[in-house]
Amino acid sequence: QKEVEQNSGPLSVPEGAIASLNCTYSDRVSQSFFWYRQYSGKSPELIMSIYSNGDKEDGRFTAQLNKASQYVSLLIRDSQPSDSATYLCAVEAGRRALTFGSGTRLQVQP
Amino acid sequence: SQTIHQWPATLVQPVGSPLSLECTVEGTSNPNLYWYRQAAGRGLQLLFYSVGIGQISSEVPQNLSASRPQDRQFILSSKKLLLSDSGFYLCAWSVGSFGDEQFFGPGTRLTVL
Image (cartoon, rainbow over all chains, first blue to last red; front, side, top):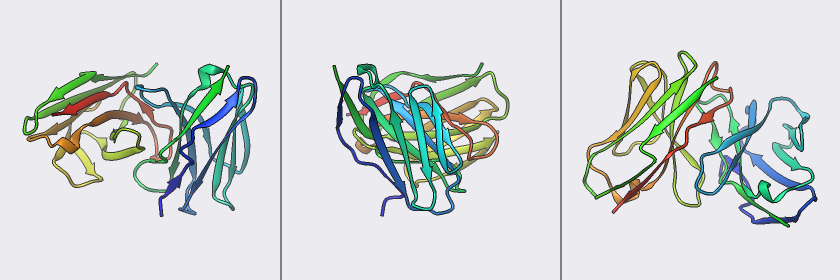
């Protein structure tokens, strides 16, 4: 069983819609959760971190964490073509570093 | 503000040749440093991490090695490259505990022929 799982996509949404990206993790002791955005050929860029159950909002982005169900999600409101990228979920579980999912490719159609 | 540099940006090397990739961080002291590899269409695989000068931990046994000769310098090396070493190599840094946010450098794209 993979430690961090994401649907590879592509997830296609029209411009202006809400994009919903999901991630599940297997280690119940996980404490820190991160979303990275990676454009093709570029390195990952941190966009959100979340540590407590509930929602955390930053501009058009909202991260949601549910530790009981072991999932974390990212909502992107008013999606723009520039949001088209691969979104990586990363989880820290008391280990030495982060464990990354394989990413979900998002396509925002103009 | 903090900045992380990696070089070279791209590299094409023959099988069996040596490798040296360098990463430096500016604007912070005593960072945790990491080397990841991303194969085409895959997630990030942690290769090495370091909490201080000369302190290296390996996550995956392979023909790669890492060194940290200075506080803000991290080097990834190999004596003999394999075809399977091709990929996108990313250096990252964090401060504080391992649960803290990590920030990535621009990466080195390595092709082994």
